[in-house]
Image 1 (cartoon, helix red, strand yellow):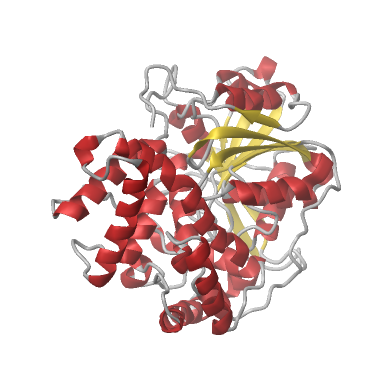
Image 2 (cartoon, rainbow, N blue to C red):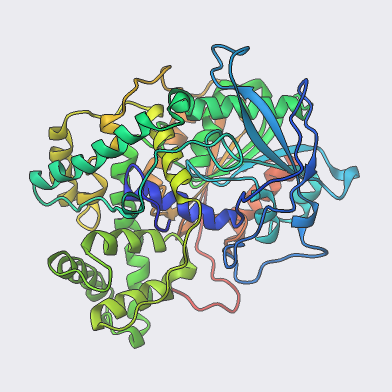
Length: 513
């Protein structure tokens, strides 16, 4: 996503792209009152500002009437820091609401999450409305957003990360010494998180506790059940929620799916697979646009990637070394709309021209810190440097474009605390109410991981795949077979009778890749 630095650059990329999907920052949320006795007191969200250029992926956003941002309401909900001690210390969860403007058609509330971990979601209801969420869905639900614990306007966490640490990209490990070198950075970050002023929150910022916060939001809304739409990391959050609270789960939609273990060491390594799945889409695009001079065939463009990466490893140029080139290419390929930018960046690095400008990403310290908290608390990561040295050898061969980076060591190897509870196991207990949707060539949450989640859910889930690339499917892509399946489920409760594979669809009036 952009240039977050997380447990791996791939995790960082996922979070920042999700930020683009959300399209809104939590900024300052004034005029909100504390929730009392399970009741949310709604106030103004006038300072939740839209970031220029981030509103949505769709080239032609569909919107009618006044900007939904003016209708967004906010509140703060108190929840336990530690759910094992419900009467103990409390933290705040910032919650937002975009109400249905057609009360006669409203059937309930739809809780939404744009991904992360570490990504604010207070403005996500508005981002969805601006990116083409069908009016039928907006009529059917009050859209409920929230900043997860540790993030944004909820009680935030920090690791006191320096600008240099935030800009760090994991080395593409070609030797065991490269892993040892990366371990020094990872150890420093873990030590800073453990010694930060918010370390009192450290053991309690996890996906399971965020899911419990979601159930507290449901209760505060006065709803016996709540529906859910989550993308990227939000799929794992939704999966955990519906396992912990099956009776409170209404219609559950998971878009761009992680595997059943969330962001564990296996998921981090799978980013290498995601790059291998996705780069051919860009190579096809670049080969069809000779003005970029990156190669006349798909194979030539793919070889250009390796050539540029190795050249920049030996001699960095214009602020790019090999690690940045690999990870920025990976992150930009989350969106089809970024393909011209990828081509321009490659061309500039190849010829020495001025690079396209890179817009700043605000809130990176909190986003990156909270992502460390969640990913390192959710699961146990290998602690021996030798494990990562072996993994990089395997993944350099298996996934040569990114494997040396995504298999490298990160701060979770040196995390100071053991998990406070076993990881939630995703299984087939509970109602058959989960709809999974997935692009076949998703770099951030590869299809291979989604298939594992589908298998774990068993009869609880149905999965719709779309023959296209990119990260994120609903509501903004042109594949009507897949998007219509989501809209139908959210508005009627009817899912496809069985798993559905949607063929590629060409957007009307748009050139192909």
